[in-house]
Length: 185
Image (cartoon, rainbow, N blue to C red; front, top):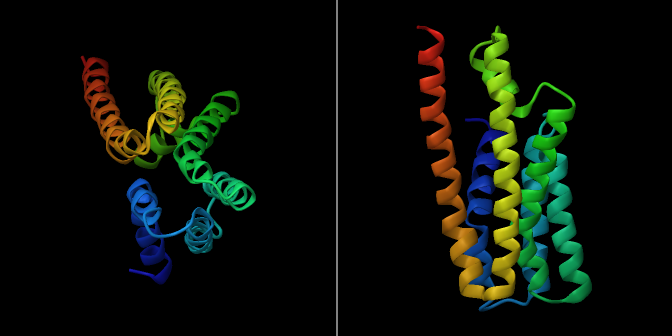
């Protein structure tokens, strides 16, 4: 495994744990200190992304906004905004691909099958729309969790959100199997 792959995997794992790290970190550190750690990890993750065309610049922009907001205000709120901004980034990335095809899902599908039939392209477009809706709803719930309590923010952004992503992936996979089977009849 290359250094960049290891760095990408390690920092990716840290960002998956972000809600827990923030929740626990705020027990000991000031928000600005945690924002500094976020900036360091984001920089490391971005350095491993160099040369790739992906969501990386948008994701980095979200991390920088969180860091700037936290440094300016000195409050926890900036750190709590990160999951909301990530949903906004992914919504934007997926929505832009609907306007400027190929869609994100079509691009992923073409990695396995470069010659997608028109029916499959239409399906990937619908799946991209579903993900857009998911990111809007998930972002709204993330925003609401900020207003409720630290515990609810942690529960939603550190567990429920990930379970919902997993469920959507599973449902989409099962639907895709049915769509593919129907196309072979």
